[in-house]
Amino acid sequence: MKCPFCKASNTRVVDSRPGKIEMEVRRRRECQSCSQRFTTYERVEQVPVMIVKKDNRREEYDREKVLKGIKKACEKRAISMDLIENLVDGIERDLREINEREVSSKVVGEKIIQALKQVDDVAYVRFASVYREFKDITDFIQELKDLRPEDSHALDRISETSDDG
Image 1 (cartoon, rainbow, N blue to C red):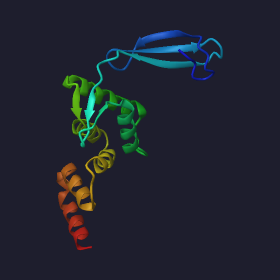
Image 2 (image 1 turned 45 degrees about the vertical axis):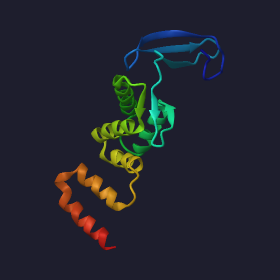
Image 3 (image 1 turned 90 degrees about the horizontal axis):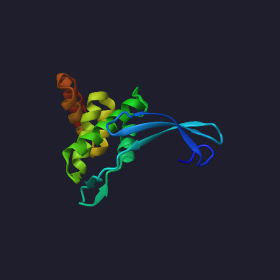
Image 4 (image 1 turned 90 degrees about the vertical axis):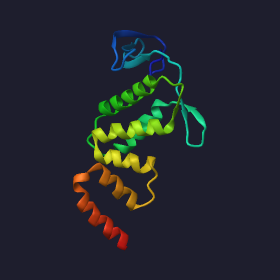
């Protein structure tokens, strides 16, 4: 394993323990050249899950792409990176439990939406607006009505106002 600091290849494992997710090992390493410490994660390589896009293209599931989308939706919100990582871990676990080699991008998007809905309403609406391709404020209002049915009267007044202009 190369040191991320000095690029030397002489590192040693200082500590190993189970990772946050099943079948993962967290290793604490130390570079013998520069004495810097860093963490690596070892995961079992599994059969890749292929994501079927809207246009029927197929691409391999990309954890980083899901992480990036969730991080963008959670920007400037009080949501820790640990929680975001846990969301991605859960989504990834759910996809593997489906036990299909190909999964629709719709399934992935809905899993992300459901996870964000439980964590933060603003992050949920941000992600939903991009994923569901909201066209105008009416789409936002409808999503907000679905999110908070008890506040629908106030949203109806907003909707009526936006219809006028």
